Amino acid sequence: MGLEIERKFLVQGQAWRQPPEAQTRFSQGYLSRDPARTVRVRLAGERAFLTIKGATVGATRAEFEYEIPPADAAQLLALCDGPVVDKIRHVLWVGGLCWEVDEFLGANAGLVVAEIELQSEDQAFERPAWLGAEVTGDARYVNANLAVRPYSNW
Image (spheres, rainbow, N blue to C red):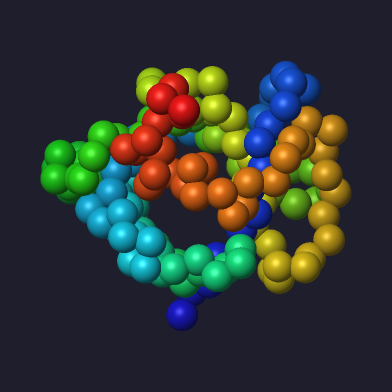
């Protein structure tokens, strides 16, 4: 079984806006937003993925991700439950670990969230100066929820 151990933080200020290692535009939607079994379709630049995630316990959940043809993803996005979430993902390396900083667009514009995937929930990591409050357990910041309760409506 695939596992994802991820912690999520708000981003403060603009210091994170250094030249990123990579930058990709994402459009993603949800075929199921049930917290016990989320099914996501994602266009990531020229690639596309179907991802199934289980219920989150702490910062850990089951995750299975499969690359699919972009044309299939475009058709699946039309079947999604709720609006599509658009964002630009900036990949930054800090202290030897990869940070993914998501700059949300559209109805979620103004929201910037950083995620780090870890080997264990208690793994130590360097906190960049631009890292704000941790929101790992706050359901408002789950992308599936941002699709139907966007940041601009809070």
